[in-house]
Length: 206
Image (cartoon, rainbow, N blue to C red; front, side):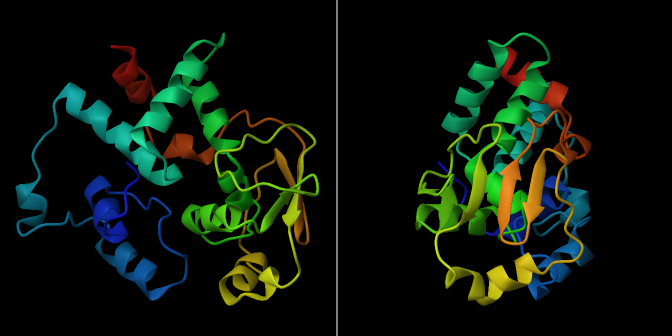
């Protein structure tokens, strides 16, 4: 089941910004101020040490929360990645990065992955000039991504996202205005800096 609870609470529990709140918003600012303070009555004093299995579970949960997917989906991606030759962790990240909702987010068409997922589900995104309403759709090399109509780009939060000067588009994507293109397959991800991928692989390999 996809997590739908308080976003700041889960980010504080994991101790990192999971990208669940719109950058620049008041809620995101509050999160950054309290990111190092765990939720709950006892705060840091109430935080207990995790076992090896517990640490693996926490890393796995972080990955789930970042991409906004269910446990069943993540396990499915892992099974696909583990059957491919090479580094299972990087194959797993590549599958997650190539989700259409993530690509829409990476291109700066929406401020969060949740907002991107909504855009896709509501039919506002085109892939190769065809409407795609499946957030988990896997983009391929050469795919072109754009909006289904000009009205949607005038929505306030989308307009702000499109004009974000601090956006860093990954090198496997190309963005030109309100259009994007997949020019390579993702070979690495900034997600690697936030997580211990080895622990996630170990969690599912048992």
